[in-house]
Length: 288
Image 1 (cartoon, rainbow, N blue to C red):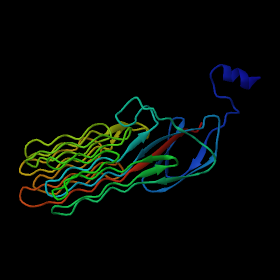
Image 2 (image 1 turned 180 degrees about the vertical axis):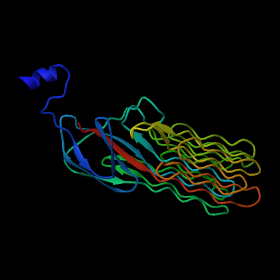
Image 3 (image 1 turned 180 degrees about the horizontal axis):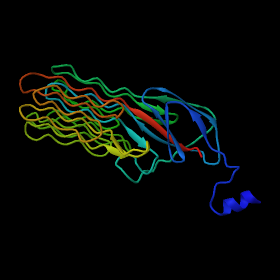
Image 4 (image 1 turned 90 degrees about the vertical axis):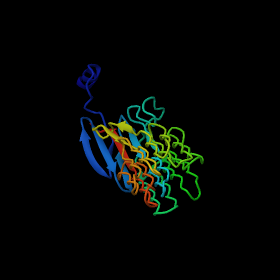
């Protein structure tokens, strides 16, 4: 009798049950537990309850920037079921996973290597995985040799007038366009298209997306800035992307953000591109 009256008044019944799980770094926020994976591992559900929703943020590794006035790397693919924080910000159609008692594989995608100095390619980022959820690695930036940027979670920025890399639907955006005078495109981000080059200046990286799944407001998965020819490298907005090189190498994306690497500059030499940042997986559920 007491339990039913308590429940009718909006309280939690003493007989309520909840998820129990292990894996990653575990923190708490109110009635929720948060498991953060900065490296690959296993998320093990040992008990299920009345509320069996596992909310997630899964970000892949960012793409590497190209060398010698190269395009910026695209951000790693961004998938989230928490608080409408999917790629593009707001209006997420993704829903949390229904927990079952089992081990879930968690794979953290590595950031793609930046191009070595010269007319060289960077490397695309690697996928991140949580159970059935896969985010696609960011595309590499375009370079002076092959020209082509790669598609990815977010696409790489173009070199000169070659094609931009395309983003993956609901994971990220396209890279920016380059110019005939080597102002090269910024990599796409999870929250916006990479900036176009302007004259001999590199385009800015695409915007990231801000999430509160970890109980702090953190922006991740921005694109890398494009490299310059005789101007300025593009900058990366908040979200872990690397700046394009200005008479220097492109900056690396920040670890565990999925940020794209910056393209290398070319004013005095054929500088290297920056590496993409590694990905991250965060899982959140009600535990009391």
